[in-house]
Image 1 (tube, rainbow, N blue to C red):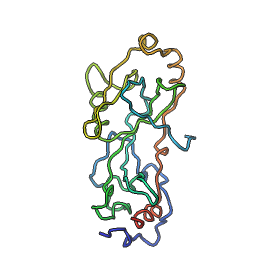
Image 2: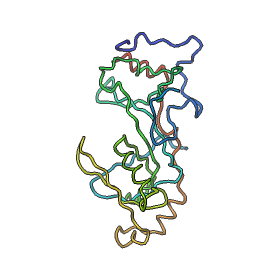
Image 3: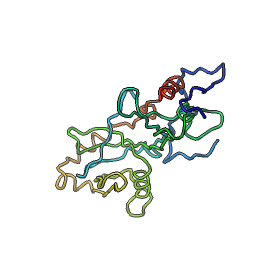
Length: 223
């Protein structure tokens, strides 16, 4: 395996500059998670950021199942780190990703699963559509709550969400909130919240930026 992907080769008739154009080719899929088995208008999403203080949200129905992808988190050419969506999230033999061809000892070479949901954040002023993206720990917590009797499903309810702890000790907290309690307990007008939510659409998977083979190859060869 080439340390910096200098030996990376593609077929002669393959357009290395092309980005995935169809759902079947997309590195982002509708799923609670991606297995490792073979076989809208906006340019950027507003990211939801967990805080220790609870925030009131509601999941968009079209977020189920959510969309998932694999992400490489690598040092950039200048400074800091940058994320890159893996072009072969399911390890299919007929696909390839230049970043996966790098030496496995390079930090961030192994991609991690990310899963995204569209939520309405009613603790934002004004209310805001946001993209909640998390790794396995968050997704496991959401899936457990979605499946839990007397709590799930996640859609159709208001939730107070927060986060505690740091790094490996992070824990996510979700508590259902009754619509009738929004005004008294959270100073949120339920009529305005419903109006905002009913007019909101879910983000499309295309909101997750993907790169061409050529772009990822350039990144791989720069490391």
